[in-house]
Length: 220
Image (cartoon, rainbow, N blue to C red):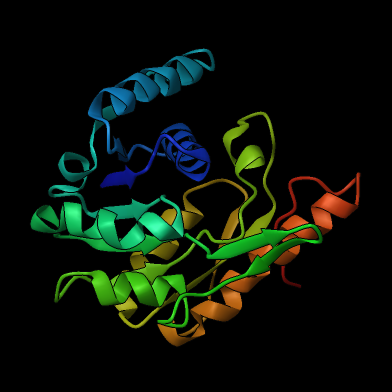
């Protein structure tokens, strides 16, 4: 399967790219607005994996070229770049769009959930997506630093939301391909705001408790 990570040079994109390249045989493509930057980061990811005796090729390309023909496109970009990114890649979109982005604002107290007018960032992505392209929300509550550290074991859940059952099932399988990550069905896309809002809570708890860095979610 071909997985494109638009914004794959950023924190969450790096973690997902490394984990999928490390744990699976899927084709991973790192995208960026700057193709040269994407190619440089792809080589860095390959070097990290080579140090762990994993020989693989990770492509680097512009976001549009990365997304062209991909089975799954992860929008690993900040919420405020989401609509522009979708517009830039729309011509080549054929697969499932995945949004892990969360809208947040900060003040002296910490971070606070700041959803767009659409109600959630996942809904914003769905509104911007070309007709017929399914959108799934997933990977919202993952600590990017721990995700990118291949020495760190994961024991997290990720809640998957969306209105297309087949698209949700596909993304859930991809999540389960990452060791230590368990996908849970969160229902339709209308439930995305409840999932996204957890991210600010986790960051605030990590900020105020020295022994709780790299928090994730686990449901019992």
